[in-house]
Image (tube, rainbow, N blue to C red):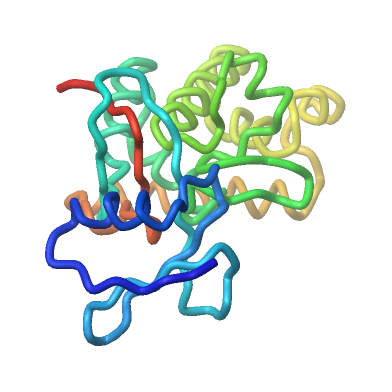
Length: 218
């Protein structure tokens, strides 16, 4: 199933998708925009030009929301204010974990922006790991718990986030795993780099379209 539609306004995307019957679940639809502004849709990724589109329901009114330039920075700021964590640290973690792809799925099964494993997501009562806001809040809440567990040590909390708390306890510190040591180093380097710059909203945009059939009222 595929189609192409030249759109004058963002709102027509939702109408076009409904007409085509492309009301699919998360990760079930792809799109790209050609040089003439024509939107091409497909239920398979035909080539590298196609980006993922994800669709999910949100609580609230029954309006349709179409967002072409998704900015996760508000979600990061809200979560960090709630759990008292440095925003630049979380920005760096998301960059390393998923490169800001809310549909990211690792070979081990880690999901979403903050690459939460299913059991961790369940412990954080996360219902939809693909929802950017919910994934960020659950990931930040989990990292807060790790910070508290290790008396505020960001290095140990990062190591536990990557390798698991049991590994940190086993070695009484950062495990001697190359992946974990590189992860901690890379995240902290990005954290320092981000701290020296004025936040640029474009840095935290996704390359997907999100259509939410029900959106929260502002």
